[in-house]
Length: 91
Image 1 (cartoon, rainbow, N blue to C red):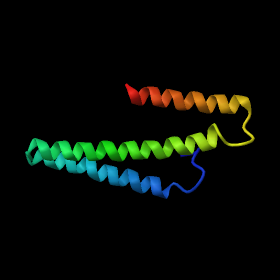
Image 2 (image 1 turned 90 degrees about the vertical axis):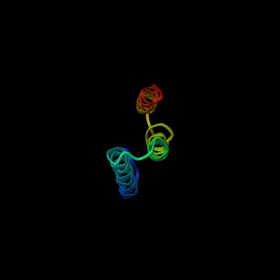
Image 3 (image 1 turned 120 degrees about the vertical axis):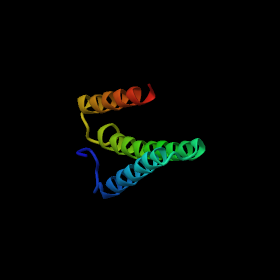
Image 4 (image 1 turned 180 degrees about the vertical axis):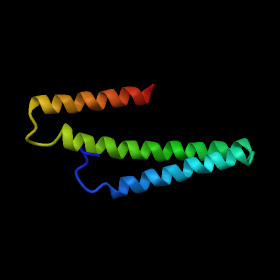
């Protein structure tokens, strides 16, 4: 991601773990696992995605809203981009 300040290998690793968790949901559904098992797997994915979102939001805020030296226009654009993402997520 262009706006991340450092190497994004940790974020890529998180995404790959999330992909593995989603695959586990698919396997559980195909194997006709109990609903409780599927619910736990889905809840785990949701938690993992929320953690990823928190990390990306923090990086965005640091790089595009709070970083010293940004122009008012850049800061405003960063805030607008963040609000658009939050609104989409909260629906």
